[in-house]
Image 1 (cartoon, rainbow, N blue to C red):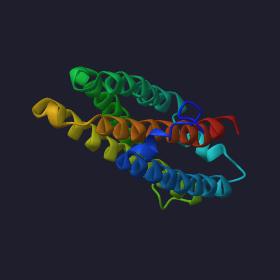
Image 2: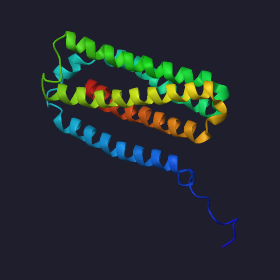
Image 3: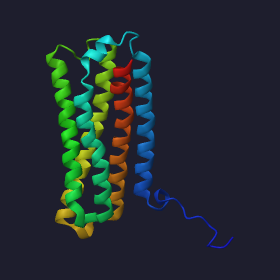
Image 4: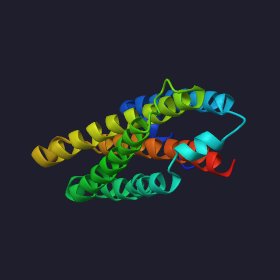
Length: 189
């Protein structure tokens, strides 16, 4: 077989760090699928209380920030260290989302709704909280990438940008599913 007919190995197989990120994302995907499945199974038949609890419109606005951050991380990844502004924009959009999620929790807690209030509430706080934790980890990775790109850009390899970018897209994709299942499906039920 000639070299021209041989398919190139996927990028993740060429770089061990990217293979590690891909395996991590695959395992976290299975984890989130399990938690989402549990959430769906634990949904009450009468959705009037969850409908009254969740602020879909407000959460959608914060979600738009997270969704937009997929675009800014892509622009940052394409430009590398010279596009740190897009990296900073990604961090800011992710932080806005996280603050929005925190304010949603605060609003619910002030209304006497907590993880121990019922099965739906436990599932809600668990699923959205786990996602929030993953966003926080992503914010730390973005901040680290920004600092290294600022202080020592020559020491930063493209694989670092790519790995962080993959993880951030994963966090965004998970929220698309979580927002759809938790907020939108609850609103139309």
